[in-house]
Amino acid sequence: MKYLEELSPGDSFELEENNYILLFDYKKNGDRYCAMLTNGSTRWLKSNTIVEICPIYKLDKENNVLSIKQDAKNIIK
Image (cartoon, rainbow, N blue to C red; front, side, top):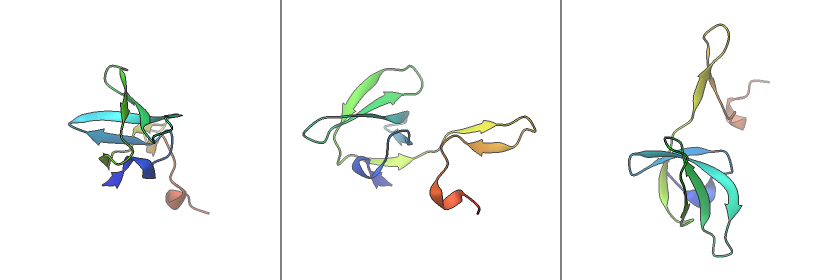
């Protein structure tokens, strides 16, 4: 679990049994703009909101599971 302010745009998370993606916009007071993945509705959330990270995955041509947003820790050099 992390605070919303610790995430970067494009990160996906779960809150109140709904899945969201963090968008780029934010307010001067720190609120973050998020979009619900199930219906596309958007809402402002407080930056100190605690959320559960939930990555989004896709299948490639060989049916390998790949994360949509690559984390720097997961990249093999």
